[in-house]
Length: 392
Ligand code: ADP
Ligand code: MG
Image (cartoon, rainbow, N blue to C red; front, side, top):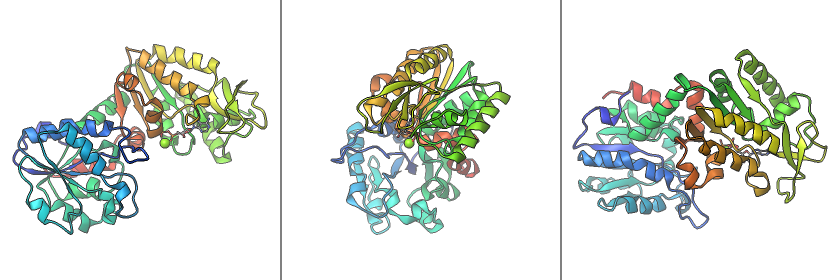
């Protein structure tokens, strides 16, 4: 595939797919503008080369057009970053095509939430055609949406000369690099709720990494698989057999898969008190909601030594401060290792960190949780494949 900095693109109208799916506060102000900031290099690059830009983005998962899911707050924030280019919202490009024909050279158009159109998620060919008619070239800079077979991701590259943007290039380069020729030793840290959603991801990493550290809800399933009582911790029988298979897989790959040796338990998710238990001594009315101090010390020792670190999934019920200590310790330790390439991804994982001071020390923050998982699993994404097949 070809990226925009590998060819000359000037004086064109460009349909640029970006990820502006930011998290909003209850009053609809922007809670985290990282995604808007990350889109700037590509926007500025295309502007510098005298192109007109039409931005395509989505917000949330709206079922139909509604004010709450409008990209208006995004427009406002983007305008602050690009004071020299007027940004104009086009509410409905199908009902009001006039507005687009009036685009001045330095003006940027932002199409209203593309998921307001059912054709987007359905990848409706008619809808793709309507979109394609607006521009001459398509650029995908939305790695984190590229696992979706949507019109603005896989439909447009069939219809227009298509290229990858600078952020897409960066994400692919980093993730490809760590999976194909990682600096060893390599540790993968995996947390989160359920094994079944991450099975292929864990398998892939187990094959490439030297260490796999498992925490969070996932770990309880492994403990149950090892025959330990896990009290009220949520696990399913089906997941236990997956956990056993993963343990066998790690053994075959000579990968050290470390489970918690101690855990922090509570009576329920909203407990305000907690206790530390050995991993084989969880009681009937208890739920394991974080990993314990001994485990953290062991995990910390491994992380300090590594040259490549991949992390996805909080290792505790981080919505409750009482059970967030393990997850906090993890990003302190990861960012304290200054010789490793670190990749951290996942919506909940990033919101657990939510602190610029730490986020800045991570080599690469993968904006897309789902996309990062799927890219590590398959080495590609539908949106990337579509760009590879596209004409230039
Ligand atoms: P990400 O969004 O970063 O990919 P996941 O969605 O896989 O992460 O998992 C995050 C969720 O897992 C969080 O809601 C967190 O509270 C939950 N979780 C982690 N550990 C536990 C645990 N021990 N018990 C219950 N929930 C947990
Ligand atoms: Mg999540």
